[in-house]
Amino acid sequence: MSELTAAKAKITGSSIVLLVKDIQEASSFYLNLGFTYEEIGGHVHVTREKITFILHPAVNKDDVRPNSAVQGGLYFDAFAYTDAVDLLAEECLAKAVEFVNGPNYSEHWSEFTIKDADGYRIAFGGGVSGRPE
Image 1 (cartoon, helix red, strand yellow):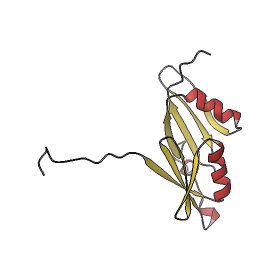
Image 2 (cartoon, rainbow, N blue to C red; image 1 turned 120 degrees about the vertical axis):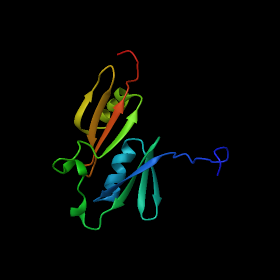
Image 3 (tube, rainbow, N blue to C red; image 1 turned 135 degrees about the vertical axis):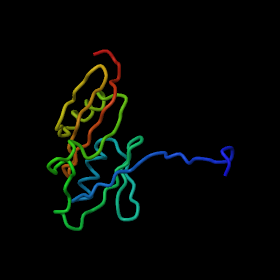
């Protein structure tokens, strides 16, 4: 193909698979945070804006082990960007979500990390809303 006729496909999003102990409990956690719910092929997709978690039920509940729990692992299992860290943190606080880090606000980068029903640590980072305090 010549350069003039070569087309590139856009990647329009991503999904992160989370192995969960109880699909109802895991789904409820994300629904409480404003995610939408869709059952597809034996697992559940929960989506909010441009992030989707595929919740897949574990046959053996002992197999559910977040990467953040492994020695030497990162402090999060999934990372999502937001343009309003402060507003999202307030939303999580109002819904009694467990925070494991932050919220930490700065001029250049703000971030916080929560823990879901299965112990997965989800970090959110980016800017703040810019609204007056």
